[in-house]
Image: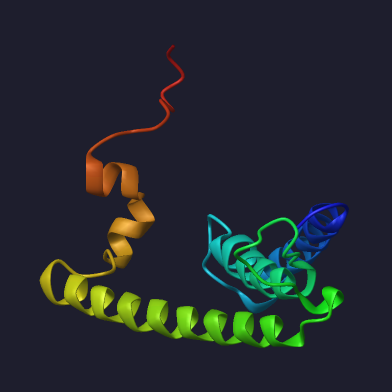
Length: 132
């Protein structure tokens, strides 16, 4: 992409990712690092917008996008995005099942209440005794 296209993509991605982060609380996602709102949503948007703004003048080995007269690239980007999501989802499920069958995916409720620093790592992040 060239010209103002990266600025447009970045602006749209920033706005859409910000809105997606707001949905985390609304739907109660357990996503402390905002992976869904930033990486998933931003990645999908960026992939599709490449199909809109691609410019073969920037990369002669590539293709023009929708605004340069090639509607096929956005279709290809959509297919690639769906395939990537399915592949990543299936592989993540397989890995999660393997971890669950060996060491387990979740800590106990008591360990979670105690805090993972203490229950899993025998470490305290902060001294709450009042001493320095």
